[in-house]
Image (cartoon, rainbow, N blue to C red):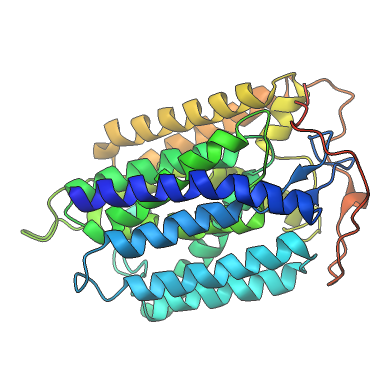
Length: 379
């Protein structure tokens, strides 16, 4: 317990004191996220908040996990470092979608090959249990890539991605603590601590954004945690897991429900529209909520509250089996999206194909604009 408390507290303190420095440097170097027709903020806001999150997370995790307890941590640190520099470059320069994808593949390869993180059992979902190694690797890569990008894509209003990240990492951290998985408990709660500190500066009206540096880090770590959760919670062999759970794939899906379902839905819509799944538009759940008049705080509280309901539903319905539970979750999620979508003003345009950002490595143009101390809510 002392290792977990130390790491979470240390992560919070490092990030809390690092963020003001990052804000000042971003102002001095004019590293702003500038408003455009697709973004919801109306003034320039410093980016690179992920620097503070990463600093708190990596230092606290490396110090919080006792030496010799695991051989996996060094590889997780390597993978998160790859994602950190990938996000950092994209926050400062425009990085093409293909190069971001390659970088994410490298991080996923490190996690799978050296970290041993692999989805090799579906635990009864669709009647499937053990799966072949090749299929397992492909499924794991897909899972890591989708979850990594899900937090990046849900990061559209003040406090949303960070609040969902705090919820997911707290749930995973508490579970791994009771399951006796110290390394993963420290990882999860270190990230929770650093993200809570970041939210002090990011909650509406935001003083700084986490950028791709922070959102990709949240996504990668959550992908590692959910795969480990499914494997540990679904292992009912005697003496192997202290806290085994029925329908572990469904519960893992529910923990990440809002960012994961929203990303899969948007990817499917873009592919059906014969566009790149990474092309920008206004079809995310937070865009729909903005359209019906919600402000940033209302959107954040709504999405986090609904995500908690999904987690509770999956946990209490777990004895129905993973296929049935996931089916119930998907029907409920489509109903949630449908209610929001059909309550939007009819004159709102949610897709603009002309807003796509060219996949070129060019320096983002920096306009000389007056820096407002706070963002303006889009309500």
